[in-house]
Image 1 (cartoon, rainbow, N blue to C red):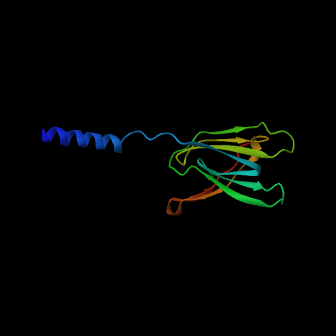
Image 2: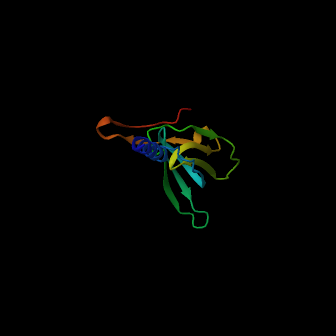
Image 3: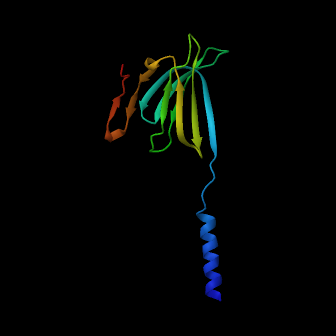
Length: 126
């Protein structure tokens, strides 16, 4: 009887520990993007302009994991309107990023550095 109780206790504890984590999806919108720089897959930086002050700040958009989330570049921004992006994260890890641009030439290259494993520069393929 003690063995059965101990076994049930262990099983219930394991079920509590290893139960599937619920999804916590957060979609972040980055507005007023002036330029997009791709350092490497999963790592971008964008320059965002404050519409009231005109001050531009650099914002890192990083996958925070070794995965390479799906990315999409949709050329649907018309005229002089600002570009924008939607970043979908689940529990902090990036699942998807969608950049809304004027054209493919809006994505610029940027530098990357992996220390002793090398460094380099990405370029826009036209």
